[in-house]
Image (cartoon, rainbow over all chains, first blue to last red; front, side, top):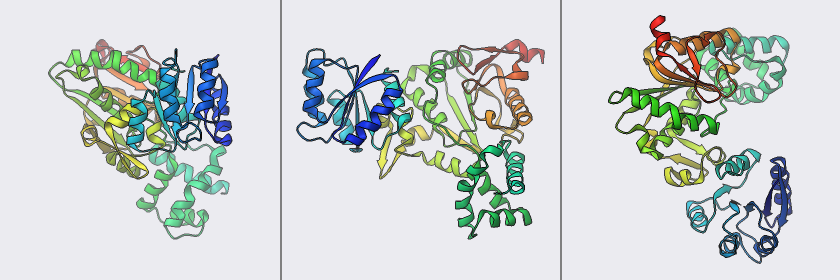
Length: 121
Length: 274
């Protein structure tokens, strides 16, 4: 089974995302900020990261840049999932190494579509 | 909604559009018809149906059809279908037509995502068409859907179903809560109003006809008639693409499976024989 790390400071969003991603046959792990996410990746690289932007301690974009510098950190497919929905944020995310981008609010169809785009299903 | 009212509405929709309304979906009708009743200044759906029974006003029937027929679609719906268009269908048609045009029909195009997906695919793969002009005509019965299709204005939900983020960045601009497809891509598709139950000859003949996830909702006899008409518009060697899982049934003669679910090719000899 593929593994997905769900990174969001909202417990509710993590729970919703977790249910959707597990229905797509992933095992999941959760992190509440970028620092926790980075530590989880150092322990074990996931296949996919669903990543919020605005979080305390370390935000999504800083996590992404740090992840891509880690050994093996270019492997996970990173899909942003954020309320930031303007082109400049999207472009910055893609330049920083994101593979896809979801603008909240999301549903299962959108996650399935975006995971499909990056070859995760 | 009582049984007689449902029968009346369902009968009208099938007669006008071919779409069959299932009795077990009667509860859905109420939610969809309430806005129409309100727009007409009527208190209830019962009043709306009463007005429709007493005078068959085309404007009202148009509103009813718009409210009730399915219009579900998305960009690049069914990845395998678009992979087949790119890998086989378009290269074969372009090679066969060379300097003349390749004509594509999207029948029952709803809000335009399928037709625009083909235009986007061609723009992303310029060598696909080479110098061959490709004409994309997209038809639908619903004025409301056609209006939205022509505007190329989509919600944040719609642009996230099937559309890669890099295409969104490249071809769309943001307008508040919506995203608008570029004029360049929009200008490559001609949208025309057409009811699939009506004769289709005026649109001419086509190298590729897509009618995906449309006929499955039709009354069976009307679906067969419509499919037959669409097949007659195909040039020899042309392709027909139905939705994944949709089949040709009795119209299958002369067609061969063409490498994707719902994709069929009309052999040249079948046309000559007919």
